[in-house]
Amino acid sequence: MNAERRAEEARAGWAMTGPALAAILIFFLIPALASLLLSFTDFDIYALGDIANLRFVGLENYARLVENPLFWNAMGNSLLFVAIGTPLVALLSLCAAILVHSRWLSWRPVWRVALFAPYVTTLVATAVVWRYLLHTRYGLVNYLLSLAGAGPIDWLGSPTASLPAILIFVAWKTFGYNMIIFLAALQTVPRELDEAARIDGAGWLMRLRHVTLPAIAPTLLLVSVLTVAAMFQLFAEPYVMTEGGPAQSTVTILYFMYEEGFKWWNLGSGAAVAVLLFLCILAVTLVQLRFARRAGAI
Amino acid sequence: MRRALVTGFAALVALLTIAPLLWMLSVSFMAPGEAAQFPPPLLPENPGLENYRQLFGTYGVGRFLANSLFVSTLATLLALLFTVPAGYAFAKLRFRGRDAVFRLLVAALVVPGQIGMLPLFLELKAMGLVNSYAGALVPWLAGIFGIFLVRQYCLSIPDEMLEAARIDGASEGEILRHIVLPLLTPVVVTLALFVFLSSWNDFMWPLIVLADQQLYTLPVALAALSREHVQDNELMMAGAVVTTLPVLILFLALQRFYLSGLLTGSVKG
Image 1 (cartoon, rainbow over the protein chains, first blue to last red):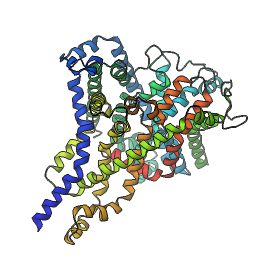
Image 2: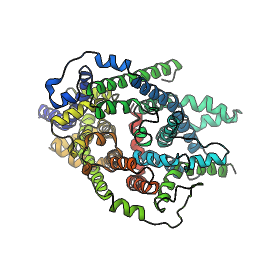
Image 3: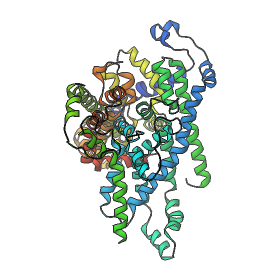
Image 4: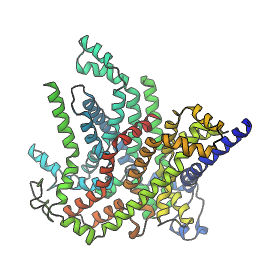
């Protein structure tokens, strides 16, 4: 009886996980691994027509990418997004979380939802909205700047302002997500600890530095790892707001991969870009983990 | 005093945050060309539905709205069908290889979906699924995140309850259907909400896999429309409202489920 039940349980286990595992294998893991193989071939529009035109080319795609200034431009842009965007988003979300966590705040749930709302909106729709908010002549952003006596900035039309413009949009869209994660971490910091430090005469900033921040250090790491990956994966933002321009200034790695693969149908070369993108995300994440370990955060 | 100050500041930050959304709504009711002034008007002079009429009449946005509803609903149902039993099995059923497979899934989470997009496209092309809804739906079947979410929730189900049902002679399938599933309602709602919102908002994959304009989902159609109508500010705002309002309302109605799921999801790492 018991052995029979055990066997049925095991059968049920595979029956229930089987469909999901098969789907993950066929539509996720195999394609991801196949990217590596594809990147060693010259798969292009001719191979798409007749597979007999496919050749194995070794590392040629990678060698060509390394010599392509447009690839390095995209890589540089993505690294800028990561280097500026990650601290920006992390800081904004932390500030928002501290504000919403404040003990002197009334109607907390209302503010929390309002700050989170941009995250659930449709990216393409809000990117269209921000394209008009950032309009040089009629945009609200430049209007507010003009009230402060600054500006007008040609946000989406100048190669130096376009990347910051997209970053402003990305920060607005995503800070609410990390805010929720920070809020959950802040709630685990015992109020008594903070209270004790206050009675001992520690000011707000001192308590933030010595009580709150050490307690949420692992969360800070989590948020920065997630944000780095998200910043490497920007695509729809430049696609809708700038089409990668002006002068290629907002072409990200993923945008470059999309154009290589689905505009020029250089699928071999596009796959090489995908592999490099994955290695970049992995490398930066490992550096972050090592840094955090040394700082004692985990 | 301090309370009023902090609350006032929070209100100001919140207002600034949702200002783009309010502005989008306001401009969508303006007459064509009205928003292109300096200083930019905040409210329409004669609010009207002209932009919406044009959007649905001339540009056939109703079709894209229906497409999006269809794809997102189906994606949600399929994702639930595939991931809920799997999540439960990984949490509660004992079978050889379970933990090893699960560890593999954890490791696979590091790989972003876009990495395999080009081979996936070729794979679906070979299967004849490119330029069809089936092609657009396929990534939602492979939701590792959903399996985690359900598994995490199932871990709290007491084993004695399942054992008792087994002693009473219930089969494993019956246990899942009649005992476990009713307990899972909150996490099923959370997961359904996640998949629905993500598939509704998704852009890159439908852009790649759906070539026929008749099949476009709202975000893909909106992106195409906005490239043609760069100057038609008010029309595009109406398009943005149609695209994003359904998910915004859905989120506001079910935010409790959404936020709790978000935390389970992020703590797993």
